[in-house]
Image 1 (cartoon, rainbow, N blue to C red):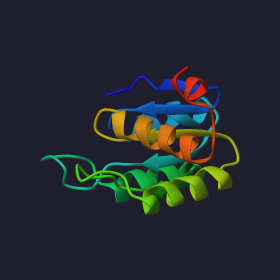
Image 2 (spheres, helix red, strand yellow):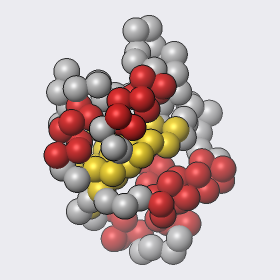
Image 3 (cartoon, one colour):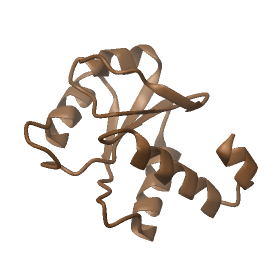
Image 4 (spheres, rainbow, N blue to C red):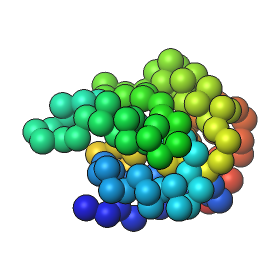
Length: 122
């Protein structure tokens, strides 16, 4: 199940749930960090974060798990996101079930940092 990675900006991509075979495609785009915003067991048969993490690390890609549930975002989620992004040495791929939580988390982190709303929406 090869995913299309949606570029939000140069070097930051979001995606629905990725599969193991998507990791090489991410690496080819220069991704150095995969951020998992999806909790394990959100749906039956979902690949686990540990499996993605192992494959990412085997490919030389860093991995961060910042699971966001339907309850919503917290300051802790944003802090963890900011810390992960600050440590990235290249492009970033964030994923969740549809890509929406990853998109929203990035937008909220940017807004908290003071980025203009119009720039975030663009």
